Length: 390
Image 1: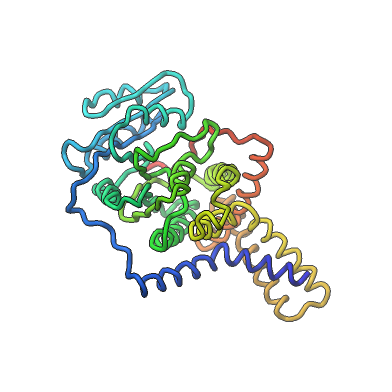
Image 2: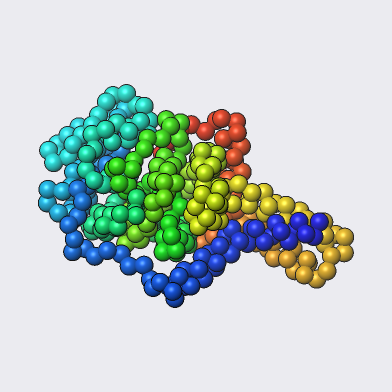
């Protein structure tokens, strides 16, 4: 029992903190022998690029998104803008159509974001394609910072950074913002060591020649598209200076809905990317993939529960002081999370309590996502989470 307890505790620690420590040390060792990876300069002949934006009923924000898109820097004659508004029933297509510099693809039939993206890709003939969401805003040099990495023939995809706009009144921001800052650090080290394991749909790009359509029922299309490229031996680079900013979820309920969907998609992705679980195929990529993604999306939430239950049993059977201290620590952490939940239901905002609450919510979402995927109740169609108003 004690062996299982310590093993469970170790895997939980490794998943959320230990991997970050190991990754940082490996990056430092790599720098000592090979120097720091340096991004290509901006004084180069940039590739032709298409920016693809899928928008569904975004009437309230689409003109602001268009203005943001038209302000982006990129060499004249090398940038194409493509908006896909399939199935939109509001004025989104009409508003996009007012801009002749933007190619509009619209059909009244809503067949889902994945099929809309595939339809858009049939019209793309540039060297690089960048995907971003209609409700996010990019920094002015985002496309330049992303495209420069394709000067390296080993790079097959580039992921930008997601940034959550800070809102002092948002309970979700405290947890979501902290989570993405930590994720950004891990992705930066992943990229420097070898490759990021998956791209975020808010802002990512691929070489057009490497793009392969994913199945229509794919839940995490952005993750699958990028990892299929990694499977072929190409690097996925992380570019934190190219970022997509979006408002936080309206509340924890909306954030939970989004996390459950991601968790269900995570299990689906693991089942479909079996080659990456084979360490003999690409040892370093498999190490990063299993450490950063697979453990989080599979066993770790169950081991958190197991570690707590075993800790209680061991202490009840006259366990030593170390087990009593560990149980007190676990109990204290979960009590803080519970306090965060209680205060959230009463609309009282204490950010220090929302970090443990958000952490527990994320792991609950994994359990709910696994259950939903097994039951076949998770649709590939994206149900937008409500966001804070600007």
